Image 1 (cartoon, chains in turn green, red):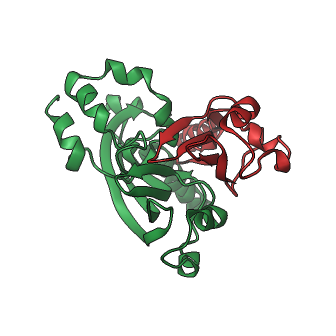
Image 2 (cartoon, chains in turn yellow, brown):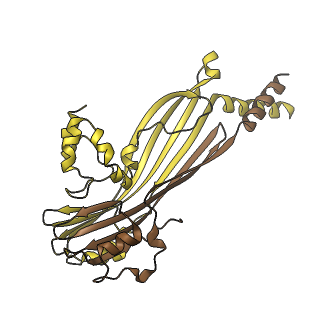
Image 3 (cartoon, chains in turn blue, cyan):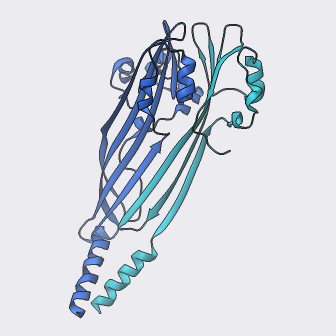
Length: 203
Length: 120
């Protein structure tokens, strides 16, 4: 009996010093009710959409109307830590992290009279990235790059900062998809596509 | 002797456990939650009235023949539990929004507040 208890202590202690894990989650906004999209017919006035869903996450002018985009993102990151062997293991541990994102999107396109031309809802889960880190034993933080999922609508407030961006990014700002006058892009979009490809040349 | 060492290690691990709480507020102050509901009236309220009541919007959007005032408050709160072996950090970001559509004459056409709201 005593031997069994001793074995349990050893096992517990081994777990405590050999490995650890962490769970990080971030819920951005409220879940969308995509089902209620069925009640909104083409030709509905934009006031109907505002009444049902409230202000959109993003709104933009289009050449012949406007668009509303609603988004909800839920991020989960899992981390698995392992203490390194030897003296260094007393202070440093290796951490592998992977993140997933659950994304909900509602898009509404209106004509110049404010009447609905088209709407769609999409829900998907994406691999939001993975990362590896060497860190002090007692730390807990994100090791994956999920910034593109977490960019806030308040990024729009960073007017002054745009003046300090690299030249090509500044020049491209006139066609920005974030200022509400040139179209929209999903928060989850990569910088490597479409309108942003011009900015990549600055890197 | 060895048992004592392991027990001490375990005890130290338990004592080193901790927790954390964090938060941040971004955007404008959500004054639209304080203003009486009848303060905004379609066909009557003007851009000047809204500016007077709510201050500068987070975003001002120019549509073809409309101007949009978009107000946003963004509140993030979270907590962390550090148990060495198992750690958990949760964050929750909530958005409180108000949007106003004005015609070319500067008079309110449509407006809406988010169902989701945050405490001031």
